[in-house]
Image 1 (cartoon, rainbow, N blue to C red):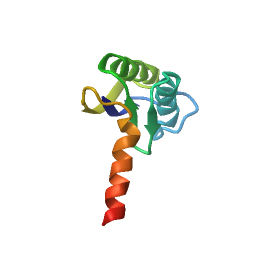
Image 2: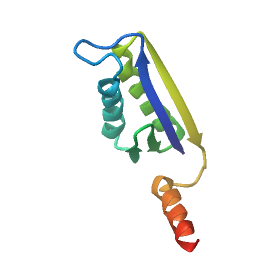
Image 3: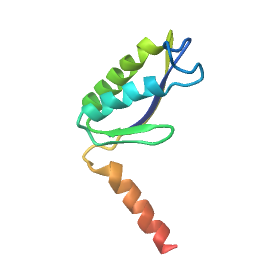
Length: 104
């Protein structure tokens, strides 16, 4: 499965951070994802991670917990593509899209 998720704190900023910035909290979450060893990529709004259900959800939970100290609440947005028996789709889907664009 591939999960695209975004996690951020609200209700307070850590000392020294700009009130409107969540980059330190997001960095903590992304570090958890990268340290997991699962295929992943981060864009300006979402982090995508690929693996089986239990391992992906464990990483999402740990990333969410890493953000918790940065605010009184945590917001999690999650979208999942559950496709049993398929791997390598984090890149495969994009490669197929690029080939389709090239044919246009």
